[in-house]
Amino acid sequence: MPPIAPQTISPLRQAQFILAIMILVGIILGVSFSKWFLFLDIAAGFSLLIGALNGTCLLTVFFTAMPWNKPIKNKST
Image (cartoon, rainbow, N blue to C red):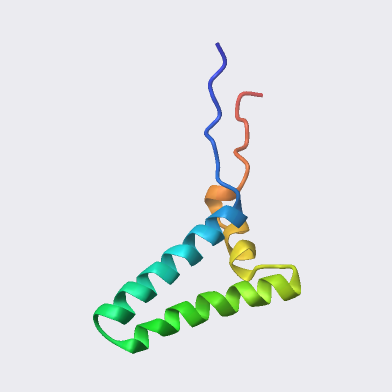
């Protein structure tokens, strides 16, 4: 039986996950400690806005360049 390839998450989904965590953390910290933490939400929203207008999310480009998103080279040749 051939080995099962590890499942990867697309860079777009990775970026959406990080932005969602950023928004949740910003809201929790903004309500609990200081209103200044709400700037995390503004930064995440601004990133989503630029991605929608530009067609390219910079965080997705960043995650595409990360080593865990590179294809694994087959050494069994």
